[in-house]
View (cartoon, one colour):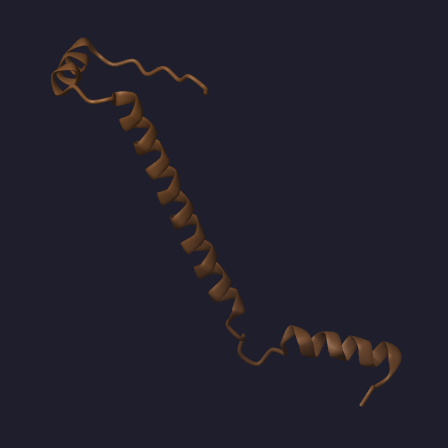
Length: 79
């Protein structure tokens, strides 16, 4: 397990000692939750970007039509 160090002032340490919880576990859980939150946020952004890219553009041929045109021009129409 990796060790990280956080510096806090004496007053905050005194307040933490009064509560008496396992601060290491609390901090590990808080970091884990934040990572999961960021991953969900990034996934949501990716979905939104993907949806914008998937929308049909107005008046332009789709990728399939463009590729078909290149192939037909190179090899002749298969239909």
